[in-house]
Length: 462
Image (cartoon, rainbow, N blue to C red; front, side, top):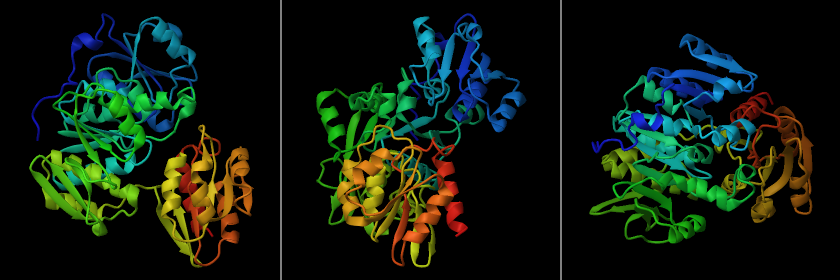
């Protein structure tokens, strides 16, 4: 293990004020974890949620004797804070957040706060797509190597709560752009950017460049002793790197070109080159198939190589990895029709990967909350592979307008059960039914997990 120490480590002068009041906005996984860590570190903690707090989180707050409110933001209490931790789902432009900043009250993310209290080495992973799979892959490899590792951030348990309750040597964090927006000094030892395509533009004034800058915050505080692993085939990433200074050591991965240092394909095998280290792995043995998953494996393998994991352990881990739920997840084959749950595809690029993997005529279930999507990128794949579209969303106007002259049959539905029943009637033996929404889920579902779970349940009930 690298014992260089954690440059994120807590400095009392950064956060502590004379009142020591920590306010947490939002009582979900991130917020409650932050509250637990804050109390452990001696803060007077107050949690405020404008909505209704889920019972499981309310119980945690009560058990830990942390004061909270729901259905309201008590401004007098909140404005008395030394520091405010804002949950990633809360936009920066709501009135309470703007007012806090006008009063020069520090507003940060859970990631920024928790990193100050761990000596563990941090691997941070971001990107528009692939970050969940890559995070799970890195975690899987390090666990198989019998290292003390926790997975958190935008997946699994709160980073802050893990820091409060355990002393892990490694933290593998999936980081959304929203989480990165709230950092000031956070710097992972190893950062990974899987790719950058338009997503969440509604949170970035519909300006792609703002979203890109948000993603690159993952490397802004890195030093020459740190590493940035990135997709060298992604023009958005490579163009940004050409025009901006990065202190970290750059280690690209590519499926299109040979590299002097990094990860690339040679004779249809994965080759890792770092200094004098060289490792070759057969693509055919990877548990996850498809070009996008090859890239995820490349990023994870490069990370493990930097952390001095044995080559055989890396190979074995990539061969037996089971993948992320709700990401190209086979559900059942019924009457010769394969049903596939890709509910985690909440943007166009993720759905592009899914459609590209389809080898059979496909009934495509699509729709939800549009985040500024441009569906035209999907047009060649839809022409080639999609026999019918089943819309699953409140507003399907843009989907119908884009594909009306390309796909003969487009049907609108109002729930997972109806969508599956309609797809069942349309699909024939040898077809596939693919739920890959390209949209957020919040019009009809609690989350993409809820959408995927309802889809799977409806398939099982056919």
